[in-house]
Image 1 (cartoon, one colour):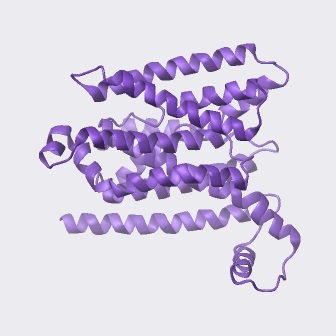
Image 2 (cartoon, one colour; image 1 turned 90 degrees about the horizontal axis):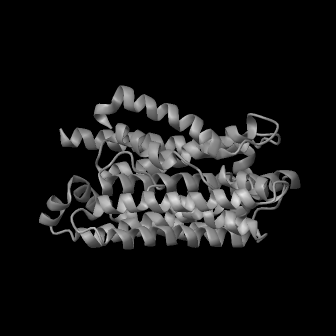
Length: 339
């Protein structure tokens, strides 16, 4: 029976990998300057092998300067937010938990809004968003250490409080911002977008995101024990306190780095782990990579719609809410017993 479940999980994981590749290639073919899969492969192969250039400059510009950064950013941020959400839900044993719960997103949003109010450049906006996201979680963690009876619940409650404080600070910044110039910038950034991400920003953000995902991936089998319960995990020789710190640190690193370059993109970290769990079950050894692949495919797809649905690009955070909220409601009403 266990072998059948494992084979089923690997089969779904293989299909998710195929879907990821298909969405990645299709994303280049969509838009005002479509690049067919054969053209894409030809240019990529030519670049890798150093073959003589026999393609137009326009195609190379579209592939490497316009499409590639935002497609990779969509895949990276989608995988990152999904993996962080899966880790948080397992750690807190609560299916309603997402990367927002400890205040990382609200802190990052405040840092970005404050930087835009000061007129700083995009790089400093990203750096300050990253620092404030980490600061929010550190404060929430320090507060939770004062709760001796149930530190996990204390951390969630502290995160909600810190998130509320940073959200209030962001609202105040929007209140005093110049309504003609700064306020639209802050509002657009908070709605989330990956359209303006460039290669250097992607490289900068990919280091903490990939590092965090690697840590969570290596710990995925221990997360199975933590998700069952702290007493059971301790009986199996797991130091739950250290595990909690490592998982929270890695997840926060991912969340803050994602928000620092893309703005606030909600629902991905909350909804995608549920879809992964429904597909392959609760075993984190399979569910975790499944969440990463589904999250990457989901955000690349949503970004395709964001740039194709209207003449003016729609902020991606709006579309993830339009897609995520109804699906999550469906899950609660129809599959609540399996969430």
